[in-house]
Image 1: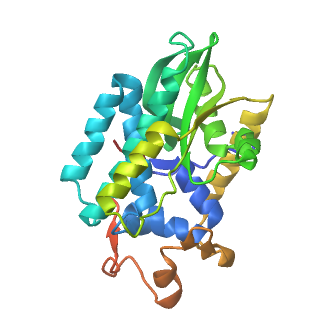
Image 2: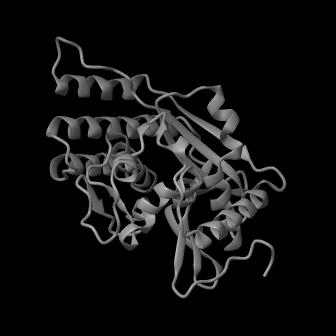
Length: 306
């Protein structure tokens, strides 16, 4: 074993980009999210932003495979049948944003030459065994063939899209880790094509209903929204350097038994940590009932489930 070798446990241990990033942000937050009760706990109600992101990525898979109509039908089924604790107006707003983002992407794709790139696979799941019993797992947005090479395709829907975003894309740890995993399976990825869409920021007018706002948002996505494609080719050594750091973090995660809270992680630009109350204001152990407002996760890496 080399310097960054992982000590194998007696049972499969899985790590994802999200769990590694969470641990680096705050080991205590990681423990709540991925270790408590065996698979972690999560807020009982998902945030609106998370629901939009989940629906959007599922829709992009259908858009790339089967076209816009199939993607829109999936969103409509969500709006009609699924309830994540949101009232009907909130659910309709989530559906409008998701459908609008798909419409904007479809409009962008139709402006591109039909032979410019081809889809290899969308929403590809993988599990890379690092050491016996230790796995790095993930899901690619898409693999495409373009300009005689294989590229990752990564979808982003953001509130703010500016030059600072594109300057940081080459250091995207998720993409570098996913590329290492695919190269280990013999897929010679050379870079990533980002599809970046800006979320609609229209607000409810005093004279309109929520339904009218949703119609106005979809029209904005249909006629004004811009989707940018940014191409990043990896520099020499970028992928390996990122992976070396990833192995070092995983080794620390396996050895950690204290999961010490990072005091600067309690508040971020997204608000308070969802575990702030049970982390700071009361003692909670696995022997207790699941705290009010939380639920046991169905699996450690729910974000990777279909």
